[in-house]
Image (cartoon, rainbow, N blue to C red):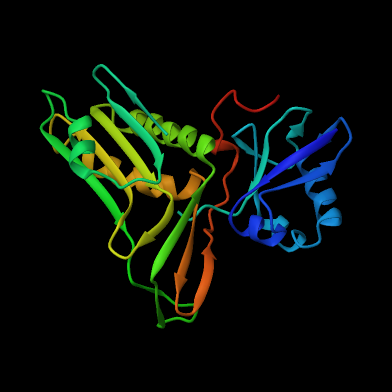
Length: 249
């Protein structure tokens, strides 16, 4: 079979294009795919041992089978459209190149019974940690990129996890910006509502941003006087991070 593999962030930069094509046997696993890519695409080879793999927009592992027609994507550990559900548990999951309207999102997760809304907003900072301990460097802009369909699905997964831990939570909003952002602009927002402040809103908002940084496929590139560089994370998902029933048996 001929497989078109999607590439993101540093892998896309290494290959010089967003997809690569490779011929594979009809029966192949993720491990075999990576071995063949390393041989066929020398520029990608150094990044493949630590890259993450998604098959059909879910995390995949070495023994995961790949079949004709599957959507396969490779990307580094994450560095950091919408759907809104009605009724008593409003939810917003959005990857957007537009600005984040904090008031709009707080209003969207606020019900007549809501007495507390906790929000977390990330912003572009002008000074970032340098490569050497204790040294900072100037950042003029950040460029964010996302694997949008999978990112939205993983945001929904985070919301399910939040509700399992804090069942009194009412509304949940998760919004991630993509594209180039200037210093001071919002990059991400998490908003969680409940009837009272002691019903998990603080903990859920913290959990939401921490989990987003682990499993939602979004990456950032720092842009400044010293040049441009992708920022990669360190978390490697395991099979416990896969939504039940989405992977091939």
